[in-house]
Length: 165
Ligand SMILES: [Zn+2]
Image 1 (cartoon, protein in one colour):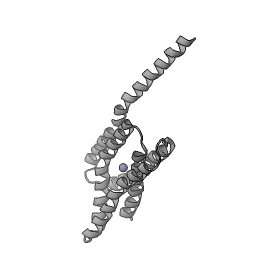
Image 2 (spheres, protein in one colour):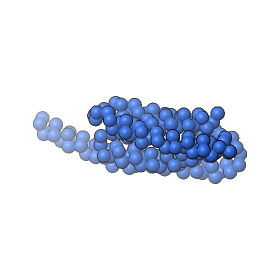
Image 3 (spheres, protein in one colour):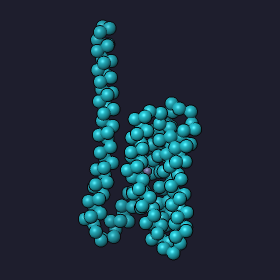
Image 4 (cartoon, protein in one colour):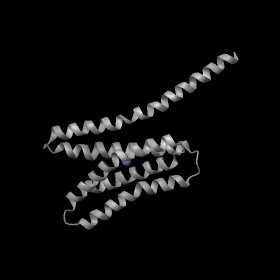
């Protein structure tokens, strides 16, 4: 069942992350979503491909069709997101949250459990698991610049209030 659960779970995830990207209307948001997607899309595609190849070793054609289908989901989501009239921050947040939730669910309930149940190369797997978490966590430092910018904006706003008092 694992390849089907992965295909459905990662497929739903891929559509929602595409929608979140397509609904973004600020260049900084588009950059962050794009970097986040580029960082994990290869790993997600590889997990799915390995799972499918293991389950259907003699049916290369079926594996290729399923992978092509998976590859279409995110661009489709981006396209649909761009069709929606702009300034829809709530829809973007909902899609980003659903993308994050489905990915965490698939990772925790399928990929991590299955990989660590097999006791070979456990230390290497754990090190790459930590490396992957560190890479994605590092993205928040890219966003930090925008955070500082917002603080500056608040300070200017406060100065302005004091001035008017
Ligand atoms: Zn993704």
